[in-house]
Amino acid sequence: MINQDERPGYGYQLKKGATSLTEAWDANHHASHNHFMLGHITEWFYKDLVGIDSDPTGPGFKKIIIRPTPVGDLKWAAATYQSVRGPISVRWERNEDRMKVSATIPANTTATVYLPAAASGEVLESGIEVGSSPGVAFLRREGDRNVYAVGAGTFMFQSRL
Image 1 (cartoon, rainbow, N blue to C red):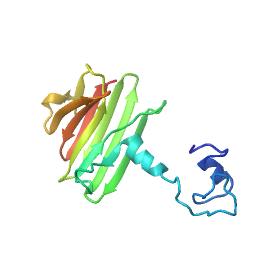
Image 2: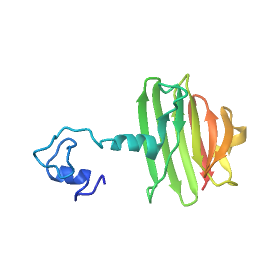
Image 3: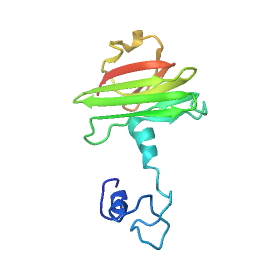
Image 4: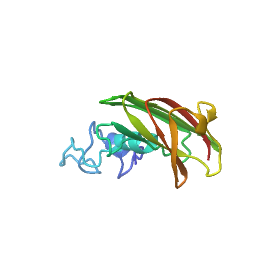
């Protein structure tokens, strides 16, 4: 829907000359041309694709959720969110059966990392077995992901998918 230049689509609104989100998908001139309805594509990039989210049990990014979601044939995604507690950065990339996730968590915060990983696959953090990595604790297996608790710092996970 982002690139689609036919109705409905954001691309169609751009094709019709819109410089802000329009109220109507057909970008007609009788509707508002400064409208935020359905305008959360940026949130999708940060929260869903890259995976940066605030944990409701630690408001204001005191606790952070990192849950990257690879989609389609996309090979990588990266973003930095400037939270009130400092920058939160995530970059993920996948190649065939491997997933790499790098996450930087600001000082005085914690994060829960939902790492896509095969149930029996090896997981590394900064090149060593995740169980031996300081500051990383395995919490549980949830669906197709291993869930880890981490503190502040930069973590570089690598898993098999």
